[in-house]
Image 1 (cartoon, rainbow, N blue to C red):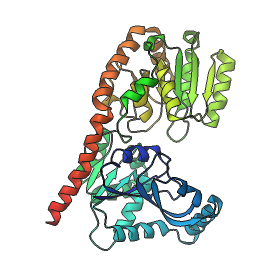
Image 2 (spheres, one colour):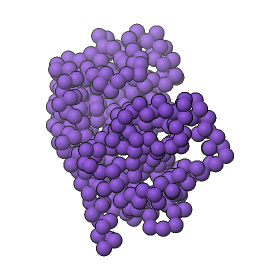
Image 3 (cartoon, rainbow, N blue to C red):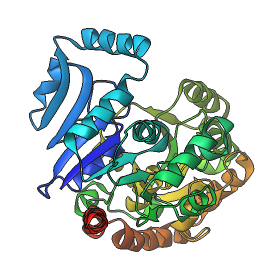
Length: 397
């Protein structure tokens, strides 16, 4: 079986998804939807297609690189910028030619605004039988961008023309159908695949969640993230947070400034977590009593899933399909993303009720074993590709 992925090669989500199938003996190819000349270090046993790329990339001996190798990343970057300036459609042309050459059994574009648009444009220019096309919705691809005039028509066109659609929320299945989805809906699974629960157990603090004294805040503030609301909510809980410390990861510049000011005004110690490894991030979740993730749009937040897998009590915005995973008030708290008062109330309850957070940890642990174990998810992922290949052969015959 030959599969061509069109996806962000630098993304850990791409790497984790593809890792689930690389041992099947299939011929796997990756066409980066964003032409940066790099691939995520966790990717292996694939062929990746760049325009220009630095020869240092070839140090990854488990990836075959295709494109124009040059001596340095600087020269490669100059080459990519020149192509984009003088031949703005060069990636569409490259993808179209690659499909004709490879003749893949299927094409899987992961994420819509880059990979989906690119594949759709190449399909419209293809001029022949196009392979079965799987479109995967990431994060806000439909929930937010589907409401924006700049994107809505293109998303509708993609949904009406793709053969298969996958996502990680039933919410997005309903939205896709409302926007004209005609293809088949594949199983709703997390876009990062399953978790290695044995490895997570080694990183998890053995003490009960109620004994933990760390509050963890996701630090994104921007077009979607609302970490500043989280900081304001924490400030409102200053009296209840004595003896606790707060940590913020992935903090944007404005969040760093606000965190310093909150510490000055309330005395709450706040640590800004620098860029760290995935294991170190998991350990943070595993030491946290409360995890707070706020944003105006997402699919199922990977941070939420990692938090519940590591025993932290989640306080998650209502815009991220959390209600498809946790029971509000029992397994976590689901809150509005832009109002600090209900977020602060959720924090106070999670701080004051040891029984709540410990019971939630047990319930979430059972949920994770049922729905997030890689031994449960991986066979489902493999069967998706086997099904698409089988149905494609049936149509041909």
